Image 1 (spheres, one colour):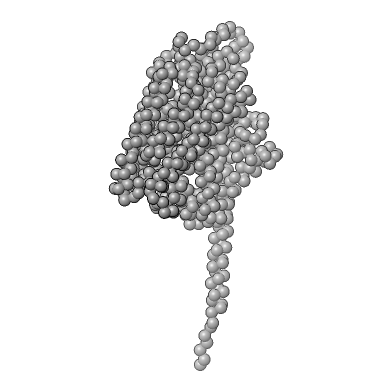
Image 2 (image 1 turned 45 degrees about the horizontal axis):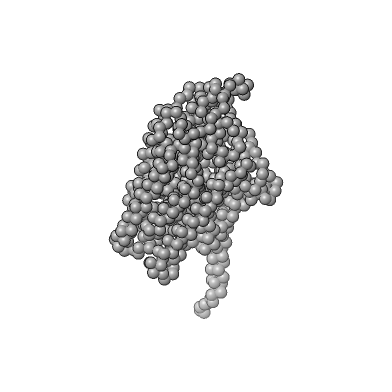
Length: 594
């Protein structure tokens, strides 16, 4: 189709020339029909930047492999650091490889939290939130990304005090609630980390296609192999040390790109007012759904939990988490504002006769409009590509080490040498990375005319992770206090999942739809249409049911957790009283004769 870019064709195949219309945003269809718009010529790399040739192949490979080589060198420097710190803290090399226990100052934790959290989602979702929700969406995402680290900063010291030798929250769950809940929570969180790792790798494949027209493998395989190499060498310390450079680079690149964008957009006050307002109802729903769903995901980010035990002490932990979360919130806000500016600029472009540029066909791609602006330089385009590489690599290495951390304490129960323990951890890095790499390659190429291939639908799997993690929040965090019992925790976990299934069953009338609701109706049920003001029919943030679901799931989990715990505590108390009375009744009474 005329004007549809190659990268967007890869995602939406034969998407019609749709316009996302709000009042005052576009001219009427009749007015647009009067514009004599000439057919666009196919993009040609020699004539100027275009889809699949924003930068040259040589420059793209140079930037990608150059960054990855620098990160690998930094990761290799972690080896002598591991040996020195392990001796200083009296621990084993293998334990420090897994946990970097009690070694990091606040600035290290802050930069690591920033790099770990600032993934490839920054390029897509804040702009999409701004497109649909206006300022509500921008503020919602900014607040949401801060809430998880904020709560962890004040709850984490309690977890550390109750189990100082843990490596992750799954270890604490096993000690507090037993093996059953521990296995369940571990499975949920490994799925969450794995699908996010796949998403990061797939995005790198998308970037190589978009920027210089190479197959996805040219982005996915190098990132997977290089990050795997330096995490195998240096473990968590290597991930933290590379986070320092990645976080600083991300902050610098974001500021430069945003300043450039601010100087290039043009629009009227009418267009800006329309964009700022957005869809108020959809914006408020997105605000609520974002705050709760992103909070649930962030507080169970296994990479964050590793940094809890890596912090030198409570003060360093709290300062590092708050500063790091503040940096990520600042970046998120900037990307959200960029989304608003680019949408207003898009309204001006497509209000012209003939329209200028290409309309924003997919709201999630709003930020990438900066690549097509006439004043954008090759340097800026290269910075956007570098930003993508840094955000993806920083998350990929963190997720790899996070997944392996769940076995550290299990290995300590066996009489393994530190060398064998280390080799097992390195083997797990490979075991995690290779399937993720293959799945990402398959997902990037799974494109079809029905828009239901994994090239489009992979991100919908994140919604399933959000649903399961929000069901964990109340039952697990309530365990910090003695009132909640193991049975209460299990009841809360089950009740949250059952509530989601029951919702889908009631809404669509079939048992299968109930299980489909665990994916927020993105899989399993065909033809789920948007309702009312909602822009989408499924997904975690913009469907009509999302805000209600994410608000009520913790309530249901709370009710089940504390009701069952109260019943068990009452039963135990009455049982003790009955046992005491029975013992008193059975004791022989001695009577003194006068």
